[in-house]
Amino acid sequence: MNSSHPTVIVGAGFTGLFTALHLRHQHDLRSIILIDPQERFVFKPMLYELLTGELPEDTVCPTYKELLKGSNISFVQDKVVTIDLQEKRLMLASDADYTYAHLVLAVGSVQGYLGTEGAQENAFAFRSRENAIALEHQLRDCLQRASQMANEAERRSLLAFAVVGAGPTGVEMAATLADLLPYWYAQLGGDMREIRIILINHGKTILAGDVNAGLQEDALHAFRTRTVPVELILGAGVKSVSANYLEYQPVDSTETQKLLTQTTIWTAGTALNPLIQSLKSQILADHLDKHGLPLVTPTLQLLDFPEVFAAGDCAGMQAQPLPALAQVAYQQGATIAHNLIALAKGATPNPAHVNLRGTLMKLGLNNGVANLFDKVQVTGKPGDLIRNATYLEMLPTPIHDFKATTEWLKEETFHHYHRPKLEPETPAK
Ligand SMILES: Cc1cc2nc3c(=O)[nH]c(=O)nc-3n(C[C@H](O)[C@H](O)[C@H](O)COP(=O)(O)OP(=O)(O)OC[C@H]3O[C@@H](n4cnc5c(N)ncnc54)[C@H](O)[C@@H]3O)c2cc1C
Image 1 (cartoon, helix red, strand yellow):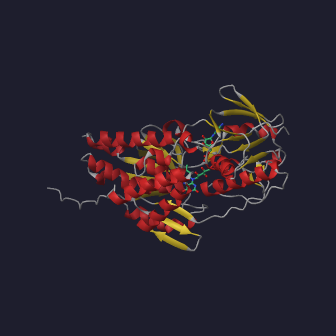
Image 2 (cartoon, helix red, strand yellow):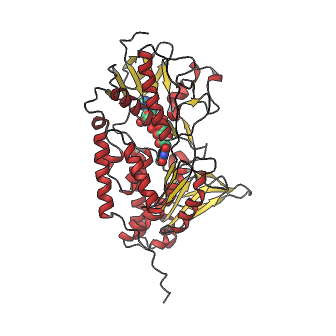
Image 3 (cartoon, rainbow, N blue to C red):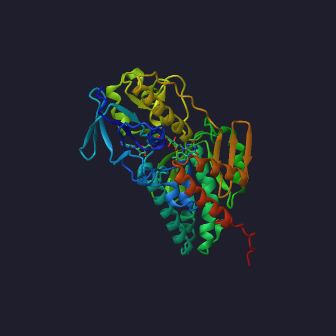
């Protein structure tokens, strides 16, 4: 292996960024190239706060330029389009190419649509900064048009917001919108009681099979007690999504039903990153997991290419599968850095030990639940505070952490949001 070649990290999300930062924090002096097509890191667990305006953009999505200042890590804003694992070479969309000594694959996953007709074209995804901005624009536009709309049927379809998928993202999204949209609509002079938030899920229970499954009751309670209640359609598969409605079919029926809505938010399912998909021809079929993810050893190396590390949402653990979580990716990034240093010293790499530190969910504005080490549950405002404090502590650099905490405390102090109360129904005259 030519050690004059750099360590190349593909993807600067939780795994990739934290691998690079850990290498530098441990004074590893090798040449590091970090490649990502985006200009900004996305702190996905707090993407809701970008949508709601609870935290500023620079806190949730700081630029790599700011994060990597003074680190001597070369950041290349570009997309990797092919990798030749035998030749240890990769090509970028710009036609540039790199030969690496070590490679870290950290490209995450992409939104999946389960083959649902019209979903990719018409539904709103929620995984990136651009997604959050597009969704905010759509929500505000619907509320604005509804506030001016005399035609009741049209107004109702503008004010019906569908969220597909009751995994953690769908649940957090539905609960957050059920506080946020009435607040925004009231500011426009609209009647918040006309707003509907409808969560549709194929399974009959929410959060099924997820690490947050134990928080089901807390989520259901939150749905009942938001500014407007979240409506649930469970045991129903969405068949198609168009710009003005979606169609769904209850699992125990042959009839399709129509829900008139101009906003469908899609959170159901993930798919392989196309770059990982393109590696399939270079990896033995039995070295892929059942989802097609490349399997890695406990030390996070590809089975046939020990100079390549892979982790986070784009790798499968050979020993025991791990949930697709930021807290997993973040800890794996630290192990990869440690193992890259071990290899450079001729030492043996160590297995990754990931500790799941409980789970945290946003269940509305100023409302959350923290499940700490599966032993203690803290709900409501204190749960929300723990969630904020935990995530802000994880933010990438000490400087950024300090800035984010300051911003957040400011929001807290000035109570940016007061959840509006629903007025009792005025009797018809
Ligand atoms: C809305 C939302 C809320 C979430 N909430 C939580 C939570 O509360 N707690 C939790 O633990 N987890 C949460 N997650 C999951 C968590 O964000 C992911 O598990 C985590 O981001 C995975 O890290 P990663 O490094 O594998 O991928 P990512 O963080 O997704 O990073 C992948 C990076 O690779 C880049 N990339 C992609 N393709 C290429 C390419 N071809 N070339 C170069 N770069 C590329 C992308 O631009 C991206 O920056 C949430 C996810 C979402 C979407």
